[in-house]
Image (cartoon, rainbow, N blue to C red; front, top):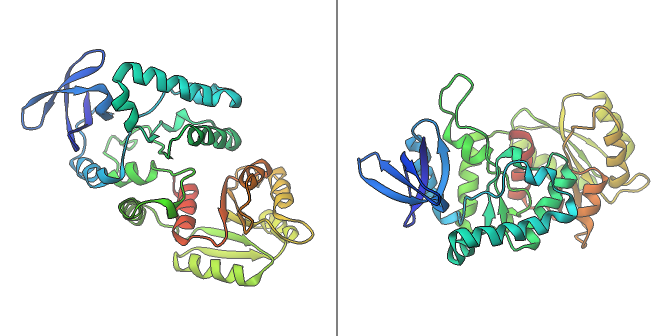
Length: 315
C-alpha cells in the first residue's frame, strides 16, 4: 500500500512498510524511512501516488487545513437527521481522545468518500448544515479511486476538481489562494461547453445577464418567463441539463414550479438551482424542501455560479 501524507507542512508519498494503531512506517522514494502519524495520512493507493498529484497537493497546501474523514462510510447516510449533530460531536470527542486537542483544533472540514454522503438532497443538506453548526467550514467529496476502469491512472485534476465539491461554502468567502486553486482545477478539468441550461425568470434583464455569461462558457441556453412555460420546456426538451429557477415570479412562483417539475418523470433527476433576490433566513431550507438541489442569491456572484454549475454537471 502507498500513501500521500503531510509532514511539517509538506506533502510526501511513500510505501507503507508496517502499520501500528496510530502510526505507520513509510519508505520514501529516496529510500529514507519515516514514522507517519495516522492523522497525517491524506490518501491511500494500491499503486505509487502520481508525482503530479503530490506536486498539486503541495501547491494547494495554503488552502487546505485538513483532509480527514469521519466515521465509516455507512454512518452519515443511515443516521436520522435529528441525530447528525450528535454524531459530529461524538466524532470530535473520539478524534480528540485518539490524536489530542492540537490535532482536533486543525480540523476545519472533511473529505468523505462519495458513498459516505446521504443520497437524498434534503438529507445531504441537513448533514452539511450540521457540520456548519458545529463550526466546520467546508466539505470535499472524494472519488473512490484515481484509476480508470482499464487500470490507467486518472488525470490528477479529476481527483482534485471532480472530487472537491463545495456543497455550501460561497466562492465569494474564499481567500485569494483558495479561489486561484479552485479556478485552476476547474479550468483544467471541466468544461460547460455544449451543456444546455434553462433560465427561468420573469425579468428579461436577468435572463440576458445570465445568458451572456453562460454563452461565454459555450453553454446552450433556453429561457422561460414563467413557471408554466418552464414546465412545458422541460417536458419537450430532453437536452436540458440544468435549470436556474427564479423564485419571485407572478402567478406560479419558483417554489411551486419546482414542486411541479419534481413530479415529472423527466424532472426527478434534473438539477434545479434556486435563484432569489430575497436572502432571508430560512430561504435556502424552503427552496431545498421545494425540490432545489442548490441555491444562489442575487446579485449572483459569477464565480460562485460557475462553481455550482460545474459541481452538478461535471462531477
